[in-house]
Image (cartoon, rainbow, N blue to C red; front, side, top):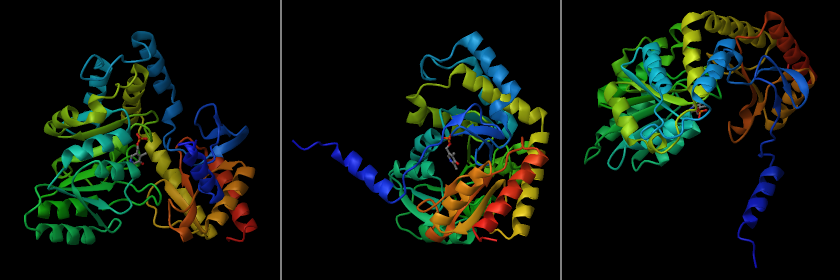
Length: 397
Ligand SMILES: *Cc1c(COP(=O)(O)O)cnc(C)c1O
């Protein structure tokens, strides 16, 4: 009889043959500026741990203390028996940090987008999305019964065109939702949230921003994109984020009005039906907020290093695209060249992975670097030197 699961290996072989399969690297020890990757000591230039918080003593101590006091699991989902005081305190502190009326945490950023977006729009509604939005937004949109429209990347004028078209429809849409990444993870550019909010206001649309790569990076003390643009809070209806990037831990969250949070937790199935964060996770997230409030120097250091690195890469003659943030793509063209550059960098002791088609256009393959505040000046010099030598060896410079 034919094996009904035979497609698993045939499809996998096709992926391998086209070079589109992931080859996983083993990280030994913590995510730190110097790490062990596949048994080799290298400088980490591609983690999302922007501020080095995943290995910060205050976060580790908070997690350890929480385990001693409350164990390693919450025992339930939040609405039944898993609503611990540490969850409540985390949301109170996050709301204060964001300057919002209320915040709500989810098990991950992905679960936030997948759980909340389909509750904000449904049949008879329209969701308008930036063409380069993150996959978790795309899946959240797909889970809703709303109609979809896409606007050109980071183009508020094109968004306005799409909204104006939607406005002319009869019968009228019930609700409109505009959703965008705050910082785009492949190019490191920033969504024009001020102009997006203005366009949305003109047509009565809600605004949802996914600030996964903006938190801990943009705005006053790393408060994120709403702070970066100094927008009045009410102009952005949902500010979504994650504890898995600059905050150094794991877990998704939203901030906004009390009405948003009450609605979101009563409706999001990824919240209602998924176990709440283990005490050490919630406690470490809480400690991350403490560190951000108490030690703003990490964010400043991140930007100092980012400016130095971008300047050096530009002066060497690399194409770093339109990045405005600590995500700096080194665009080299085809996938093969990007892979060769990444391999050469690894031999020089620098770990930065290639991003190739289909994640980016075929001729825009790149090494995506992410700056880390915990790097020393000497570390950065070493990274720049490695890029220079490898770039010349591959005749990119
Ligand atoms: C990483 C990321 C997510 C997912 O967050 P997790 O908490 O890691 O699941 C969502 N949106 C964007 C833009 C991201 O970069």
